[in-house]
Image 1 (cartoon, one colour):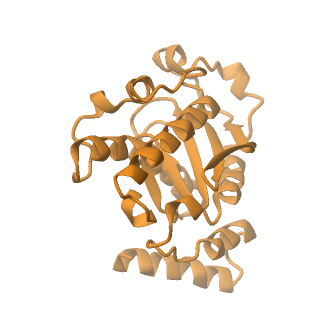
Image 2: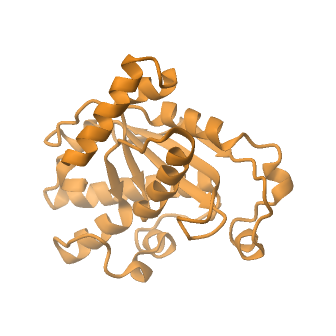
Length: 231
């Protein structure tokens, strides 16, 4: 753990002790026990997630939906999946609507962003996160968490795009060197994952979960076993 992150966590813990933090945030931090990175990845609690956003600028754009599904014991648990739509107080970009197909009137029935974040933190408590090009999704959620609660995600995360490149090309350094060759569509085609419900947060989370299990099977053959091998 980086020294700055340690002090940030201690600050949150002290606020929890003093009753200055909402209970769900305190429970989230308590649930994030230090993970033994030498543990077998197949025994880990995993949550695969995806965000749909108003654009690709992590500083200016906003989350419009989050989809998530659990993986337990190497199986996707469809019964433990969720999708949250975020109410928007500004208009959506036309180019964004062409991609995700969500209209503002659909989001008018969504929840306030703070409530979505609350439910998302409760869903991912004590889990390792998995996402495709995870740095973007994590950055978007961290920006929203900072805006509402002055905290950030504490979960370890796995990037399926980076993992796929590593399995193909050997050990590489982050960030990903060639994103275009490791898009979700291209990897699903390469690993024979039927594509449906694209650019829908719940659908993309499920597709990423299927892809991740395919990559885990390949990783097993390459001798990848522990959480540290994947993060």
